[in-house]
Amino acid sequence: MTTPATAALAPTTVAENPATPLTITPAHREVFQKARDKITETYGKSPTDEELIRMWLSGASSWDVMRFFEESVLNITGSDLAGTAEEEDQILLKL
Image (cartoon, rainbow, N blue to C red; front, side, top):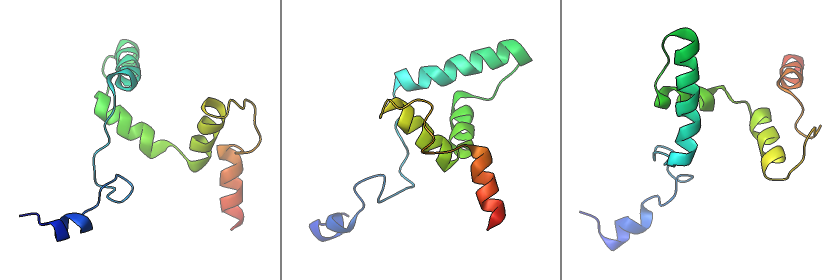
């Protein structure tokens, strides 16, 4: 049973509780459905939408996320702020 005291301690946001599932809107899910259809058309079969989403999330580097942010939110194109995945690899190899 949840009491006011335990409710105050419970995580309330995804950031506070990373195990909370993300909600993906139909408009965003459509991108993965189109990719699934194109992959199926090209290769004969495809992972599910959910598997494609997981693959996309797990495969993105911090550089990719920053680059996407710069281009979509800040409207910066061709920016050198985030670098490239190759540059990230070179930096990591030097550590």
